[in-house]
Amino acid sequence: MEDEKIKVLIADDEDPLRITLAAWLSDEGFEVTQAADGLEAIKKVQSEDFDIALLDIKMPGANGLEVLRYIKKNSASTEVVMATGMSDVGMAVEAMKLGAREYLTKPVDMDQLVPQLRNLIKKRDAEDRVRRLQAEHTSRLLYDLHNPIAGLKQSIGYLTKGMAGTVGDHQRELLGYMMASIEKVIALLNDMMDLTKLEGGRVRLNRGFGSLGSTVEKVTTELRVPIQSGKITLDVYVEEDLSAIEYDSEKIEQVVQNFLSNALKYTPEQGAIVVQVRKVALVLEEGQQPTDHAMVSVFNSGSGIPKAIVPHIFDRYRDIKAGDEKSKTSGLGLIICQKIIEAHNGRIWVESEEGKGATFFFALPIR
Image (cartoon, rainbow, N blue to C red; front, side):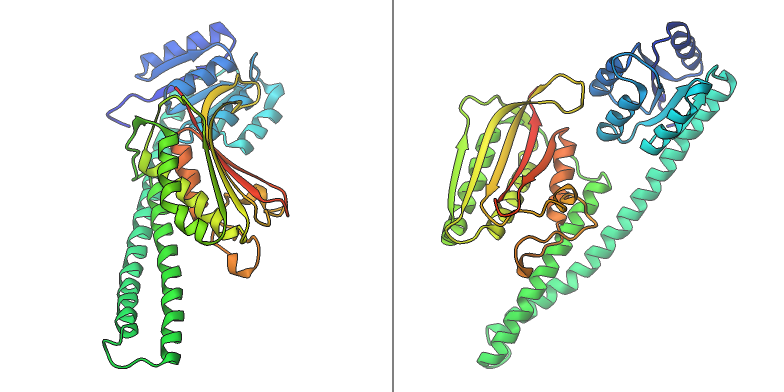
């Protein structure tokens, strides 16, 4: 950050204090943006990225805690500092629990504020470097594991084809079991490598304007044969005249493929999978106006997801299980989907009732 100005958002409904803070920080080399209330602060965060948000706790429209929640959900790299009067220290402590880095009590000590903000960014950047190094180390480790296992798979393939001698029925059965187990390990390693790249910030979106409906139809066409071969009905509905949106078609194809693969895994014979693409108005944050989104939903008529598991379906540290033991999965594919949709500033979620199937959704903003 030494070569770039630190971008600060100051949100406070006390005009004299906000203007004084803005002038002081500007003189010290910060790039400052002002917001006179909480709703204006949220709009500023929606339109640009900030290094630091200095938020008053008590503001009209949306208070500081509401703005903090929005920032933590939609702009994770922004560090938040709360400003409060002595009587609101309890709320400041609550803000720290929600993700604020620090809090200041009014009147603000200007001489301490500048070094405090600079140190905050130095600490953030240092933590980012550590995370990147950890991600790179993990990525190398996964790659080193992937190569010998892929080589083992190839060797088993040679044995199965009899290239090292005659293979009996019992040996062929054992080799088949080994091959299936290795393929599961390789799939898991591939998911872990994808997730590591996404979490390390090394995957960039290749955005372009296109039709989300066309992307979904392409994926469903590719998977129609394996779905129908399982005696499962596949219906696809795409709303007409959907607006073109800006997105990474390859990454979104990956999300749709994951949704459909999960649906196929959990749908019994004679069951149904229903895919829909339509325009909806979503309220992303409480108190905000609805905004237009293109939404994709994938329903499967399987056994559904237990109520206790639904809130944790996108938790990478929880094994997800639906149906019998054979259906157990690491759930990493869904975590990857979540990262991709969040990178598009979209929303992803699931609705399910045990015994009545499950529907996975994602929605991308229409700009």
